[in-house]
Image 1 (cartoon, rainbow, N blue to C red):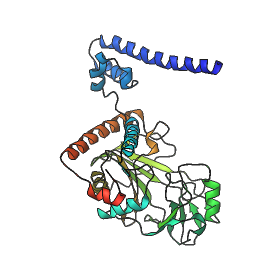
Image 2 (image 1 turned 30 degrees about the vertical axis):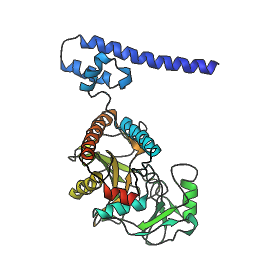
Image 3 (image 1 turned 180 degrees about the vertical axis):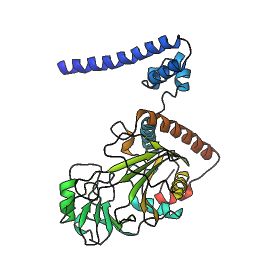
Image 4 (image 1 turned 90 degrees about the horizontal axis):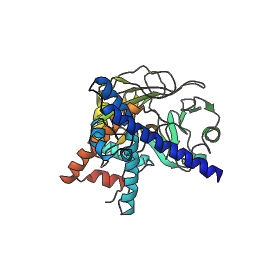
Length: 343
């Protein structure tokens, strides 16, 4: 009973804080117009979700970009996909990435993909082939990804450690630690390397139905104890501040083809948002994977509140463009065929 009472008090305090924000809004609205007033209103509205806002303030709430959120929009999209699944719409940008279908989809639009040696291996039977990448068929970021170098040494991409066997690496680094990783099916593909022979940088592109909202560049450690380094850029290549650990990464610039490849895939997919990952090799870009529901967009990820709002607005605009195309009869036949989607 005491525990339930405590929870009730926490909930009451939460709603009281929302009411306090609304009261402050009403006070500030009565003051003279100024840049300071505008900023104050914008900051206070950012604290509220649409259900917290009285109807009399809703128009102003929207004017101050209240309610825009990439995290909220993606969460809504996931629920929408579940509702669609319940009425027979299947394989519409599923959360678990079917890597073989991602490759086929990219190849159709002339986007290069790494050479593949198989994607149905069980862990015990993964072949150790020089200069290859071994990764789970259904994975989570760099967790469980290993590089087999030219000497057949097994190197963890996420930690920078070497292991005597793949089973040892999986057991010590990821087994039982991440439920998003499936260990019953493994992919082996040609490693994409940079000019200096290191594992290629990863370029994650946050795409909104034909428009780029964010580039996230990652360089992985090349030895034990090394740090993952990241930097982020807007569509024009300007540096964007994010929340992540580790030193900033000096950019090599955004390749022109990165926008082109991303938009080809994005515009051919019947969803408003995808994160499309590429590898920047010594001889060009290659598809890494397509991620419909990246975990990094949530509060414990890399997004700042301001960026969450900016990309949330891009999501709504993308949804409108997609809806217009659907109304005008766009069919997405290639997507449906490759992903075996039904609707």
